[in-house]
Length: 267
Image 1 (tube, rainbow, N blue to C red):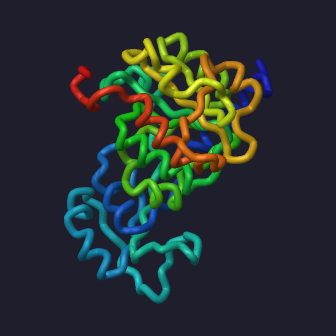
Image 2: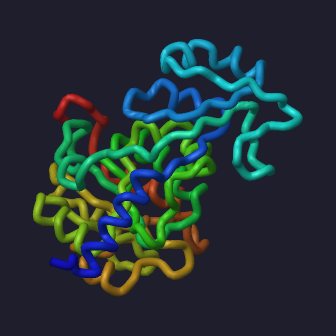
C-alpha cells in the first residue's frame, strides 16, 4: 500500500533532521558543548593556543582535536565569525517532548518562554541566557519562523544553549493550548495591553506561567493573541516605546517571580 504524501514528507524531514549538524564556535560555546554529556560531538578543530585553553574539556569529552593554522582556519563557518580558534561540529540537542520539559523537575513555580516568529539568533541566544538565569523550563519557538540552533545563537547564549531546553514546534497556538491543559497560565506580551504583568499574576502566584513574546515590529499574531489567557504589558515608568524582545523576556521572567527563586520545589 502506497504511503500518503504527508507521511512520506514527515519521514523525509525526520531523516534530514537526524543528519543535520551544527558548527559551534568560540571558546565558551565549544567548552560548554564539550562538557555536555547530552551532546553528540563529531569534529573538533582548534588552534594550538585554543587547544591549550580547552585542554581539560577536550580530555573530558574524549575527542581527538584537529590542530589548525590560525591563518587558514578550515571550519565551514562564516569568515566574520569570532571563533577564537575553536570550532566544534555537533548534532542538535534533543530535549524530548513538550510534556517532558513542561513537567520536569526544576525551579517552581514553572516558567516557559514561547517565541512567536522571533528569528534573530542573537535575540534568541540572549533569551536562552535569561531563561537559564531565571530557572525557566524551556524556550519554545516555531519551526518555520524561529532561529535554528546555530553557532551565532550558541555564542550569544554564552553556554545556556547546553543547559536550557530549546524546542521548535509546528504550531504555536496548539502548543499554548497544550500548556493550558497542563495548568499553565499563558500571558502574551503586548505593549498596549491594559493589564500589567503584576495585575495578571495577582492570585496566580503559585501557578506555572508561559510567557509569549512576538517579533519586534509585528508583535504577536492574531491567533496567538486569541489563545493567550491574558495580554499583558511591562509597567514602564517613562513614555518611551518598548524594549528589545530579549530584554522584555528577561524583565517579564523577573516580574512573574514572587519571592526568592528556589530549586527545591518551594517558594
